[in-house]
Image 1 (cartoon, rainbow, N blue to C red):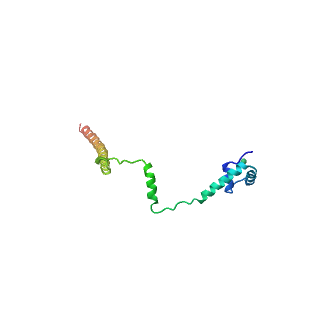
Image 2: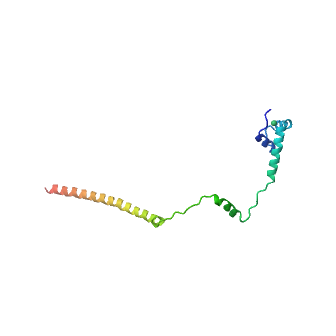
Image 3: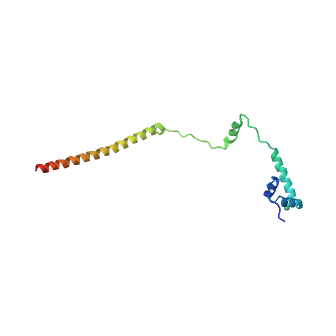
Amino acid sequence: MMHLTEEEMMEQVYGESENATAVERHLAACRECAHNFAELQRDLAALDRVEAPTRDARYGERVWASIAPLLPTYQLEKRRWWSSGWIRGLSVAGRLRVLRRTYLGTEEAAARCECAAKESAGQAANRGGRA
Ligand SMILES: [Zn+2]
């Protein structure tokens, strides 16, 4: 004879068993399962009597006090003045300025090169015309 599992007994207690009649028949015929089932019912009944504790104004404080020793300590890093946010912001702005100058510098240089090329082409044409 297969005995009832704890899960089958739990389903029977909560009225969720799909084989309720077969479980009842087994409990009537098997002393071991009947004993375990009665014990389970007693334990579950005891759990139903336990009420959740009410939370007073200091509940959060007590929870933190109880878990604080378990938490790792966090050391604040000593920050240097050059690594603070506004300096980093300035350095980014400075970098952007340098990039802008570099980019505009190459644009201007390219424009100057084109002008110089046109001028030299024009001068060469003039020279050719004069010659
Ligand atoms: Zn049994």
